[in-house]
View 1 (cartoon, rainbow, N blue to C red):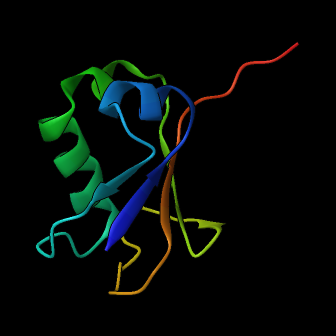
View 2: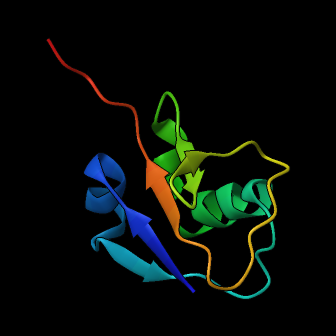
Length: 77
């Protein structure tokens, strides 16, 4: 299972796609895994997770084959 990373999340991880351990089964676990693996992500003001191209809550289940993406805060003018 792969995890797509965008924007500053990609910069922090150093890659646009990283493998996701099978032990991660929901969004809350994913966020904790990200914070453990990439502590700098805890400094982001918000971090959204999308599962199959829809924003997901912490209780969203992640299944094998789901498209999972990390969407950091976006600034613009």
